[in-house]
Amino acid sequence: MRILEIAAMTFVFIIIFLSYVVVVFGLITGWIKAMGINVPGVVKEKFISVIVAFRNEEATIGRLIDNLQEQEYPRDKFEVVLINDHSEDNSVSVINESLRGPISSKLMNNATPGKKSALTKGIRHSVGTIMVTTDADCRMGKDWLRSINNSFYDESVKMTFGPVKFQTDDTLFSTMQAIEFSSLIGSGAATAAFGFPTLCNGANLAFTKDVFTETGGYDGNEHIASGDDEFLMRKIEAKHIDTIFYHIAKNLVRFTGWAIGCYYFCFIIF
Image (cartoon, rainbow, N blue to C red; front, side, top):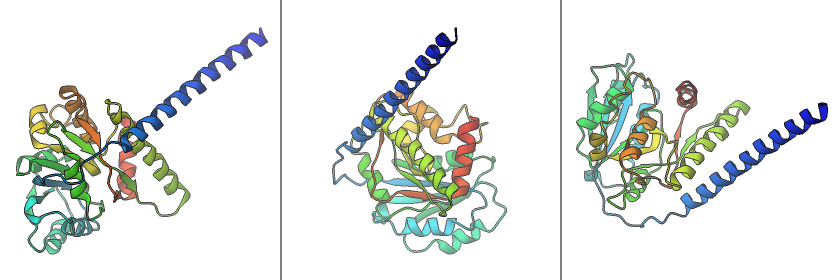
């Protein structure tokens, strides 16, 4: 009897191990496929609206605005829409002090609390063809918008998401978080390459305004605190198969430990 139990446990272990190997091999294959997608080097510049919902981000949002103002993308081809989601600090003052030059920007208050509500208001008041969402504590390179624009090289593309890197503080826990988060981003890119996207991140997400309106945006899940990126991705995929892609960028979007902590919490809960 003991021998049969050991044999059964060994068999189960082998099945689990082989299943894991198959999944990992599939993800690696998908990642290689995603990296091999050819995107035209020069794509006609579309008007981009960068949507940022913020709440109590006085310590970080000024640097985000600096990064957006440094974008090597025509100033007459993008705008920054900032939505104040009931901040109780000096975020608005920091924004007013940081905005300079010919960059087109809008700053508005959100009447209904919640990130999805704030994003929806920003999108409705935007004029761009492409909506780009990011977070107030993010940093990005100068060619970020150029890379996103190039990812919409064809009218069939409805949504793209890019790489996001957790900014570590050189501690073991922080480094482990960064590695784990990188695996999530890589898994999302790999599955998207096979035509069934599973994960994306709103810190580096882009979609057409038309498809947002067509799918109802965040309608139906406003009561859930997070998941604006994942829910919208699934809505778009349900209506438009094979229209969501991972785009490669030289400069990753980086964000802080507070942001990734919230992402992990919401990912586990929901």
